[in-house]
Amino acid sequence: MSYGVRGWGWVGVALVLHSVLSGGRAAGQPSPPGPVEDLIAHYEVYLRNFDTCAYAAAVTTRSRGGRLPANAVVGEDKYRVWHDGQAWRSIQLGTNVVLDKNGKLQKSRWGTEWVVRPRGSVMVGIDPDSGGGEVVIALLGEVPEAQRVPVVSKPIEFLHGLDRDSWRVRLPDILRTSRAKAEADGPLQIIKATGPWGSWGVWLDPDKGYAMTRLELVKSADDWYAPEKKLSERKSGGYHRPRSTYTGVTRHIVVTAWATAGAVSYPAAFTVTTEERFANNQTVVFTDEVRVSEASFGPAAVPPATLTVGTPIKNGTRVSVEDSPNIEYEWEDGKIVKRIDRAVVASLEQWDFRPEPWWRRYRLEMAAGLAGVAAVAGLAWWWRRYRRPRIATLRGS
Image 1 (cartoon, one colour):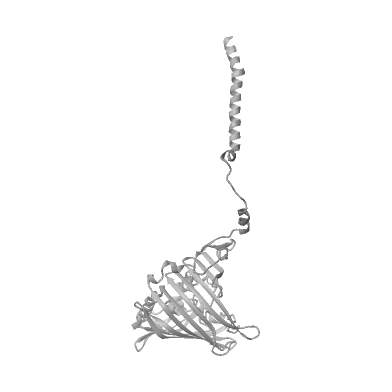
Image 2 (tube, rainbow, N blue to C red; image 1 turned 90 degrees about the horizontal axis):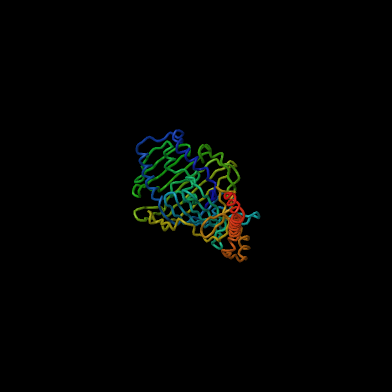
């Protein structure tokens, strides 16, 4: 279930992300060079596999402690993701379960498609029944760097080394800005870190290229959920949660199955359990069961054709361009163009426009020319008739 932000709320994230990466080390007392830094570097190298990849994923989400019955399914979502450096595309189709105003369970279906490049992005709202695009939102200029990572649900972001409850800051950067130590757990290597972003435990498997096989996160009220913003300042929007502020978040991720694509081992199944605690003393627990399939890695996994909008969109569909709000745009043959008044165009099409004959098109110029010729001829006649004889007479005298 995608129970995070789905729209366009990250326009300022690039700036605050830069602030964290450039200034967070002092606040978190960075780890000294050594085994911990080596482990973080190994994990970072593994994550680069997901910089150029394609995969499908399915997520089933259950909750308890909220408004729905315990362990009720609150979301069933499917994703298809293509990622190539700072360009990506994702198709997301899901079903949410909510309580209506009469207390009855209701299902709502939704769908979105994203295509994002370093310059220019498109988000399409998909009609679940027809499969066509209903709403189109775009950015024509430069896309904030933080948005150049695939927008997927909270549990799937784990594959990319992200945690949305930490403002989509990459986990290697969070570990580097924390007080960290390395431990061994049989064949696995553990990084335990504490800093402004909370307390983290990260289990890495050297036999799988230092992929993460388990994660534990604990955030208290004073820990950050965004740069320099405490979790206690964060308010819940309701939905499956109470309308209250947060006092803590605990998350456990465990990989339950692995698969291999080429030389890359990746999580084929994992469980994400998130406990959210609120100021009204209520606790809500979400459990996500994630299945990943059809994974491939490397440039061949993301041919250029996969990074274009695939949802059918009718010509004339309005496009909301966020960085050009005062100009109307529409969709036309796969492109975003400035909107035209089609009623005026249709009325003009009723007229039969034919080119004028050349002599009619230049009639004014021809008349002016003839008038000029006539004037010159008249002047010459007058000269010969009156002036010339008079001059000859004067010379003879």
